[in-house]
Image 1: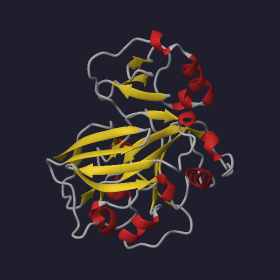
Image 2 (image 1 turned 180 degrees about the vertical axis):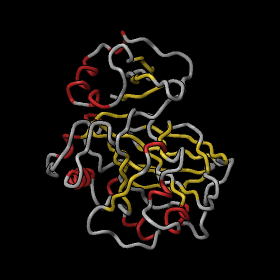
Image 3 (image 1 turned 90 degrees about the horizontal axis):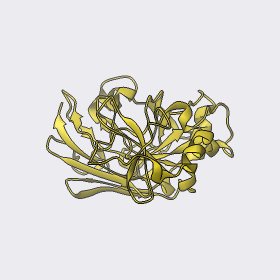
Image 4 (image 1 turned 45 degrees about the horizontal axis):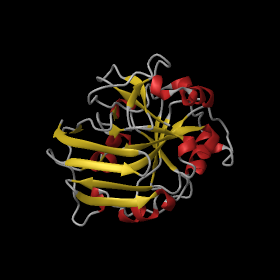
Length: 280
């Protein structure tokens, strides 16, 4: 099941994409795609509806971030061996964890702003994991039961802020518009193996990133279990699981985003994003 949110910024309604590719309005059924609506019971009730009876959404509405009211936006660094190598860093012994500010979250096709003072704004296509129920001290064996579904994330990064401005990576990860998510939240039942999903990212029609989640250093179940040992994961939290090689920082010479650029990125079964880049 593909859930999405549509409408003007700050007034998104919940919806779903039916089997014909039509967007249907879910606002009479649930308040938002957030919190308790991401649990197995609530998703099961939505799945059992006759989707053809839901109001059709006409026109070409803006698609918002696929999850609302995100509590934590957690990221995993250096989770692909070839990306770690292009970054000049060693593979970690356990997941590298950092956070993005939730104020960075935008819709999948919204405009990305290069922050003031930026000299190295970069791209990263990543698999996003959306938590469906509270996870605390969960085993790796049971970890996927706590996942509501998956989405595409562009973990935009300002490398100079990230690496040379002191402190944690959060400075380089949290600028406004640096967290496009969606277009859809694809429920767990439709993605039986999150470790076998091809992914790509293009800039101005040039393929920079092409990889697969099957080369992750730490898989989704390991990551969810690991995080739950240090903090409870709540419904609606998003975990972005790392990026394959091909980021701008890894090019020789390095390549970074400029106003006027356009990104397109996608993951098999999870849809694609397109973002135009402007000066902030």
